[in-house]
Amino acid sequence: MEITTALGIAIGLACIVATILLPGANISDYVDPASVFIVLGGVIASTIVAYPMKTLKNLIKVMSKAFKARKIDLPNDIDMIINVANVARRESILAIEESVRELNDPFFLKGALLVVDGIDPELVREVMEMELSYIKDRHSGSQAVILQMSSFSPAYGMIGTLIGLINMLGNLTDMDSLGPNMAIALVTTFYGVILANLVFTPIAKKLKMMGDDEILRDELLLEGILAIQAGENPTLIRERLNAFLPHSQLEKLKGEGK
Image (cartoon, rainbow, N blue to C red; front, side, top):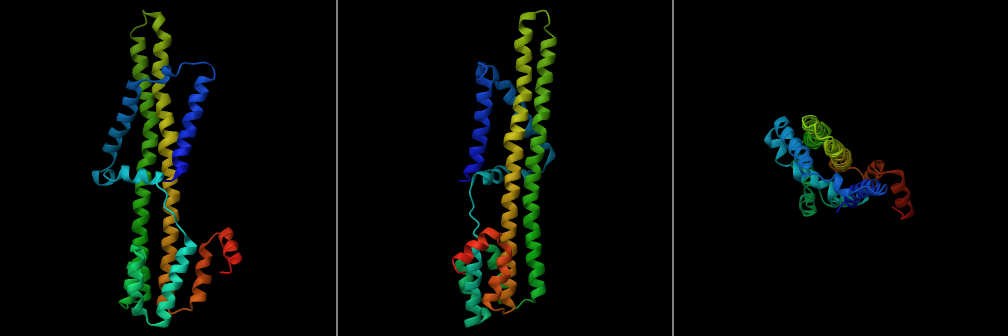
């Protein structure tokens, strides 16, 4: 589980609740089912209107990725590539197929099979870069939907507030109810702002960072595949792929003698 997502939302809610309770306010004043209904229902409705079903059907699955940890270990990936390069060097480029299939990595497998089939290196790069482009488009499309939901949330919060104000102004004869009715009207905006800034926008940002990490890994795998196809020395391949690593990881690997 990606604990920072859940932890961040929990801390944000805790800060909001603590701020409400510190002056001695009643938390029940901030609970209004009708406000939740208009904000969540409105966001869902507008999202359905704005995007086709093929985009929306995997939206919950995509958002759930922000709560699931996916460990990307680039040094381990480099070691994997070097092992395959050693097989190709000791035996032949055709011999890597069996070892690559055992790795169970679809992107690496697709590129390696193109190499095994004797496809021209430039064509291999073109095909794999096209695959990367499609992956980027899928990532950015999902992130755009979630960011759009974050803009819908405050808007529906304001709509709920306007509905509450209209109802309040329609009953001005009861002066004692003006204060409570005004508070209820503003709660809807409160929900919309929280939903946008504590849930949708942060999740979209998290997914972008996670997607960027995946793309970086696939770019590393692609460079490794092409280096193997070119018959480069495994030591040289490692040096080239180490350029993908942050300085801190490089220093750690040097300390381990890699």
